[in-house]
Image (cartoon, rainbow, N blue to C red; front, side, top):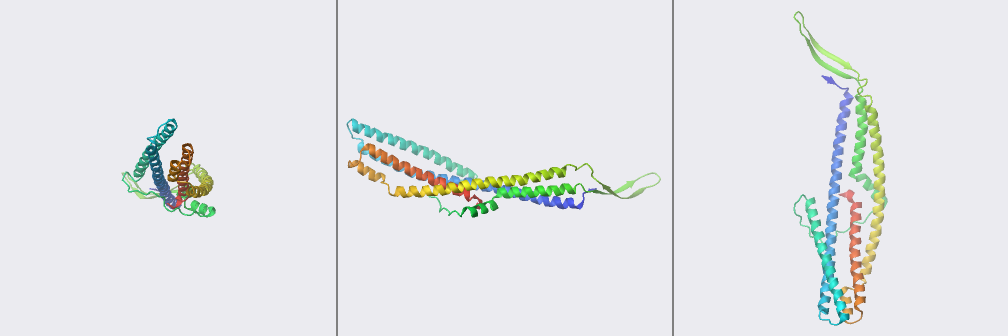
Length: 307
């Protein structure tokens, strides 16, 4: 029976534990990725439901206008009626696209849940956590990110590989029982041997060192990339928060579709002015929904280390 030098077994045992820890961290990174995808899918569903409310409002308004103008006669009124009909068609088409997208996202969420149905009827985003200052966020993210942890664990494993390969260059021991049989005499007894590997592991230590250096470089590269991504996301979230607040304030002071309808009915504004105003109103409301969703998505990515 051959035996390696005792330090080989100690280093191999520690290496096995490090590789097991790396596997656990890789699993944690995959889990976090799935949870983030699920969270973003839920945010998309909420966005589409908010959009559906806006589109339903737009379609209802177009149908109300069509009802008011369906008896109109004359070229001018006929042109106005045609514009209303076109608005109905556009609203109906947007509503159909919204329903299709909403069904797709609900199916995606169910697939992420292993195919099991989910009772998710939420129509509003949860209270968004206030972002900490950037330096604190960056420090916490880099310390908790499972991908970086996995890379650090791989680096530790590579360092341990060096020790294992160095230990393998040490002498090996042979221990056994030898039996020599013959017709006249027998010589039996223990056999102890020693072998020194001169060429067997000549380049393995050098290769292990190169791998260890690569893992260190890989960690630094990933850290720099992650820092740049975090900084960009943080600035984006700040800009989106400002835009969201500006839209909310502006829309609160805008005339609603009901007020615009009354102004049109009483002749305060022309049909052309009405469509300019109503289009601007609906576009602004849609832009607000888009900005709100993008902000929620940016915050979700910034805080994914907490998942």
